[in-house]
Length: 219
Image 1: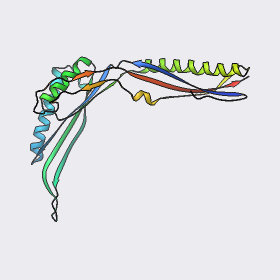
Image 2: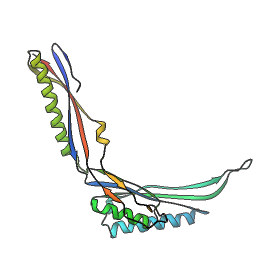
Image 3: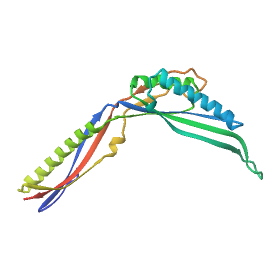
Image 4: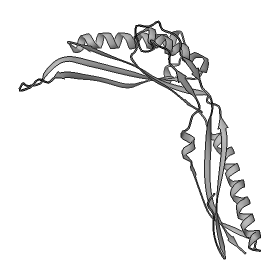
């Protein structure tokens, strides 16, 4: 807590923290293929991703609005040899899909299916709260209460009383980036040779912390 005071003015800080249970997970599912032609690489990646998208919609109940193409790229792969002009050896096609999952119990099975279909670029889940406004409001109330208590203690110690509010500001702390959710991937994730085993997913919880600063005139 950082507070400052002069004979007629006091500036105080307060922090409010609440624990949040995620209700939304974001996965990034992608595939990269290399082939001697763009057409062949596209056929592999496009076929794999189209099948995954169909599975998400039909078997996992993911709404079209929760599926977003995050990236699509075609890149020539060069071979560099001493004293020779670089030549194209193959082409790489990459496609990635961002998936919002609202049923936490489906995450493990979705990742398992991605591995079964041969997706080789998978990341996440990132857990969050879709509508965090209520939690932020609760954190704000706690922070304001703490800051006002600090101001009252300072005023009492100086034999003065709080006057009018002079300023107010708030901002989130770095703590908001911390997430206790974990993903433990089993061997074979990403199309490897080992049998595909569903990974263990724990959505856990995370904390939202809001910091407020405001000042009072003293009288």
